[in-house]
Image (tube, rainbow, N blue to C red):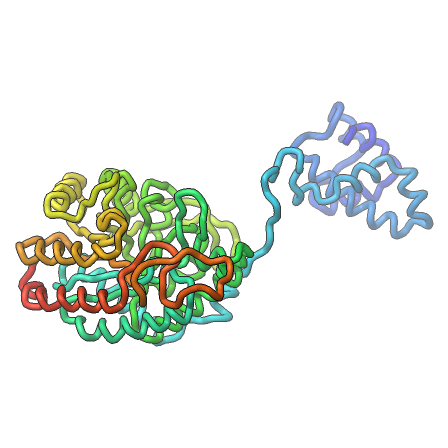
Length: 443
């Protein structure tokens, strides 16, 4: 926009000056002439927007729109710059973006699928029990048990019904929480979970994924089961966290500032896994960070980008999952973890992940890890408060087939899991050994 053009236009089109005045910025041709070669940088967009509005009004009154544009030097450049405040410049922005599509807001999804009173009761009870276990006022341990990831809603519901019955059976000693993971971090590439690609066919129907995930969480909550998930995408908690009793931050994201900030605002207790290299430092640093208030960018319930201010999460704790090709569930490593937590002035709350490198990624070894944890508690350990078990209806895993009709029901498509019978046996065995010990155990 040239100053001369503006001056000329203001001299011949008083409607622009009038529009500027109505916009709260009185402007005259004489004032414009003081600008030099171009308008002030901070005013250019305002001038263009005001001018466009005046041009539109003036053209509607002019007997010939074509003649109006021909006689007006500003008309053409303004037409070319239409939407300049909202459109990106594709010469410098979004060069690797294929498309951006709108998504249902958290508020809209919750309006379509509101949480019921019974689900509220289930979630609040689950959170309270886990907090009490971490505080030491509840003598039990808690176990997060379930599929590595959810890909089949029907199988998940069947598993949940089985787990509910087992949970009632062992509730005096072990508080069972169902693992309901919808998002999967990948070392390179691969299926990223039900929310990202619910139909497992690279269609990435994320909006459908959010609907399916929330519907399943609501249905499982109606069974009275406390639920857990991994908080991976920093946006998705707004859609489902109201139904979660315990959250995990995975080994790949424990060191991430974004995830530490997010954890500081989650309403549930949060378990931070040690690093993939086995490092405890990243986990203890994460616990300290998550316990403190943070300010960061996020979205609110209406989907508006917002500044999120958190209070800090006092119920973050460490999860030992092995790393660097070695397990770390044994008593020596647990003692090292206790000392690291004490040195950092953190509560000695330790959870053992029976899978991943603690089982050498062999699901059949998970019951052996459970036996070891049981023996540590029998021998006087007071820091172990929980464990994680990857379990499904059937033992093992399968690759996602090209023809999804060939998927085997109840079998994991991500990490291998122990089957239901093994799960029942291992948990019952642990319950039997600990039921007389835990009531007298004091942290």
